[in-house]
Image (cartoon, rainbow, N blue to C red; front, top):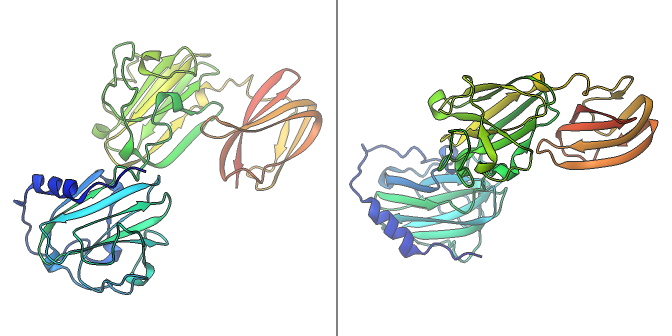
Length: 380
């Protein structure tokens, strides 16, 4: 386990910021639990300058389980995406209190919904510095009280994980999909690691983002979009020799007018059959929605099997297969392109139990008499 950021280090950072920033006297925006500041919006080294603690009220600030404060203060909230240590401090301070609480979700309304996180570094006592080891998936609230207005600094660098497809080598596989949607992607921790050395005049050195990949079955258009504004978005297509790229030097910029090496929230290319493509997606916004349409590159001859059918779809328990010719092999892939199930069949009729699959979209790959086809299956 890494050592918690020391009080001295955190206070030093607070002092570097300075105390020159003063706001018009008003009740703090995060004075109430229901208005707790959402730390998942970043930045990772979160600074709230000259919080008006002297204007805070006591509405909803009492009744916590295990450590009741019942005094005027402010609230912050977060739900970690990875287990890690988080620290909070303030400067200057006078009779300060900093306490971490857990909660059922990020919609807490009163102090009664909060439970003290009983750890040695999180005392239920006066302190200008506190921290906890936070568990991934658990919601936390931080309560801070102070008798003077002060800067608040919260170090979040250990509790939010980079997106799973942050690296080129972990690009999400989109093969076999007509449309793909991903909502509320947390770009806050995306890094530029490996995003350098691209061929063709479009290098992404120092540009953080995430990656997707696919191999075109036929010639056609691919269109991708991001929900963030045009000047705060980047979608850029690259080609590759295969789907095993691991670094920027494995990629070549697709130099087409609809795929400029520049900012923009909508991009498209004319893809060539049997060519592998990687798509970079980035934004400085903490959250954004991504979508891509790949229907134009699905080879119609190779994507269906004559006489094959299946039902029901969506399904929650079983999926029933029927074919005129022997079904040799079945595979299920998740949206990351990972194989999650396969079975040798050897008959024309078969029922497959898919109740173990997590809810979501899957590609079902069927092999019959030497032919292969992909079908979208939704698991409820």
